[in-house]
Image (cartoon, rainbow, N blue to C red; front, side):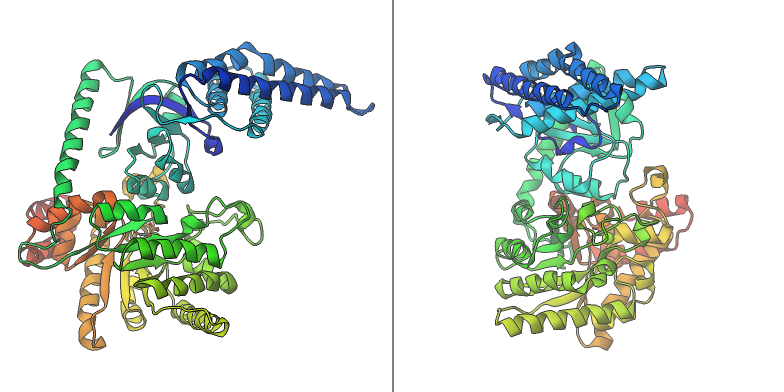
Length: 570
Ligand code: PEP
Ligand code: MG
């Protein structure tokens, strides 16, 4: 839950720094802004003076319009007000004011005038550029009250800014509950509502907003009674979290003393600290694609990747670490310049060149990652996880690239360690041909986020169909139960057990813990913030009693029937 004042952000502006300036430095920050405006004015004067003689007359007029906009009261004075009253840094103040002005333009009846917002944007862009040349002032840890961000969309990679940022929560117009933006928000423990459709256009700068992420509720301008109620709920939920912390050192065992492995999903090396803090038994999923995003043409090389993997292996202090090769594509795109052809417009990205398909399309790049992983494996227990694998040919090529990577390291005399190799089971085709994967891989990890998406043909990032994105659909539950049962039974013919874990969002939902335990699952990987809640459920569960009840759930095809069967799980 988060309660705060709305900061509306035009979609592309999260790359602008957002921070509070130190109290007492507001006037210096205003002077920074004024200096940038003076620089832009001089720039525009030069531009006008140097216009070629044969330039059309409108060119000079356009430059004059931009100069007028620069000095416009709404633009100049009101931007200063954000700095003086709220201690926003100049860049933030400028974009906040741009949004206010954009709203005014949007409300104009005249289409020609409405489009003139482009001129304001260009002027703001010039001032932002000028500000980039001047160093910012000292940052302050906090500002005047809590803020929540309202945006049309936020890229998953931009979410990482929230860790050190000023916002207490966010709302986006687009996105689904298991879109990567939402997943990263959850793992960072940031209250969020995604897919709120028109929130971005209905909420105004500075409105008071309550974000209730658990229920997917957004309340704008709450009455005092509602506000008090939510403040109370916020305190209660904080207390409940404090109580849960006592479970950190309690071994995760069911009532009949079966151990259950609770692992962490991470997006970057820094996430190991909260994972350990929550008592994670290891890392079950390191989504390495985040190392590759927001790189502006500068993808990480072998040494930089090795450094990231080394940090994770060493931070986890001997606990097992599962690192997934990049799952680029779909809603986790690279920057345009980082694609080989510079143009990455696929018709259907979720079904296109994604994950292992992308890696195998550029074997040299894939081997850079594999070599970095093999090198890190010399420093501690490391497993490699392959995303979206579905075909025997992909399995063969993956192992062949691994062999080549080992040979390359050996030829250079670079030390590397042993790795177990596992497959994500997240394409229904892989789930239905499981023996192929059981034969070749040492462990499996079920990506329920994609398994739901592909089983039900629902784009997980599309809010217009998010009501149909249903992990409880009987097809999904039966497929999942089948994967778990077949993997457990594989020990008999394979001669040794194949480990199986679930690393999709279902694993971190305490409401589903009993169901998954009853299916036979004993390894769960989730965002660190959920580990203790899931542990609490594990401690109260008796899988022997749950197993027959889960069979009834699996045979319930009507929603009401399923509800009743689920209620019996307790
Ligand atoms: C999944 O699909 O469930 C999964 C864990 O991978 P991602 O969410 O990164 O696609
Ligand atoms: Mg996936």
